[in-house]
Image 1 (cartoon, rainbow, N blue to C red):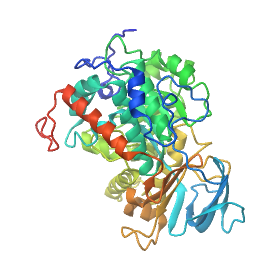
Image 2: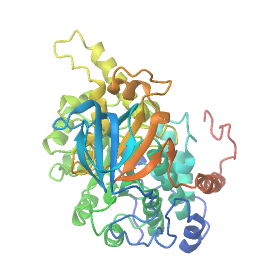
Image 3: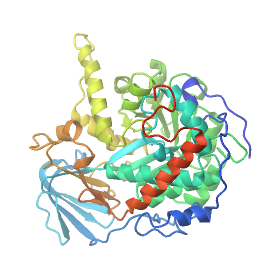
Image 4: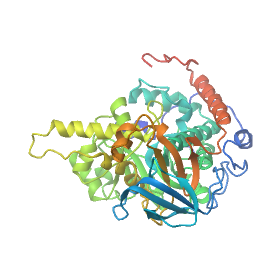
Length: 498
């Protein structure tokens, strides 16, 4: 079905702009060809099962699986459960039983396979509430770009050049990079719905990685193959007939009442880029199933509308500062009783890890609060533990997963990470929360579990053919760059200042 273009508020041009030109003609390639070419990237991949038309059947095919005992005991780590009812411990154990956390506490007595967690911090995995995963092949390609450059270049000729296989490998490499950095849940804000095949390819890449994901279906380049938003009905039936799976469904859109109605028709949460303006027209539709991203231009009244309707907020602090969205509204959210979640946004000019996110939020809020210290209503300084909560349990709440993830609570899914405390960048650790936020980076991420399955161990991704991933993503990058009309160079300069 062809669609007429819609005009969103100024900020929304980066979101779901249907009026961007299609770009260079795309090479025709069958689903079977690109799925077969990609098979085997992750151990356990079944080529016919990870493709765009596959059934989800509850457990995500293509995920890396390492056989451990049914019960695994993480012994003697510094455990940060992030659940006040469970507590945090200088030294304790975490017992995993299958896919869930069975117990947390010191000196657990259990018959289980033991993993030594001494010199490790054991904590919930980080949770990203907004990332454009399809852009994985374009990492760092726009390091000096502003938001206007991104809209013109990435959402213009680059997006128009993407084939389904480019979306697949982009999503896969992004998700694997997230897992490598200790991010166990990723909301994929997928505004690459150029065609149903593009959407299916994004889902295939996420599913193959084994990450817990929210696939947020969005629009893409304009054209007769673009089926946004109505194709969400097919996606629900074909890929998301159950919410009891690692990959769940949302809609990525703007302040558009018709889109919101279709999302709610299929039970999909709504995630939007918002920069102030346009809220009043949707006041009756705002609710707890909506996440508002950036929010740098919100008025006080609009902040109050979000708070009053139970909405969630996602802040991409480094990107907002670097690209010119405006000052990240950490304090405004807190002032209205909203504890924000965090998001990477785009890897075209920011790294994929959450250590960068947490440091940026911590230092910016404290700079702003310190500057107001003499005021009678000066805001409180946030703590490093606050920021870790933003990166874990607040992300789980924003993604609708708080009953499954975000804390090390017995009964929740075993989505957790182990961070090394014996590395030169943090030794000796004197404050675990401080080490995480102010000292660590991806090199400290030793072990990653998602739903009880090992995804990283000993600092290495488990069961991933990185040589093959590198080959496919490099080939994809070369194709996109050529068809976007950019020179093939590692030195930048395809546009002035970039």
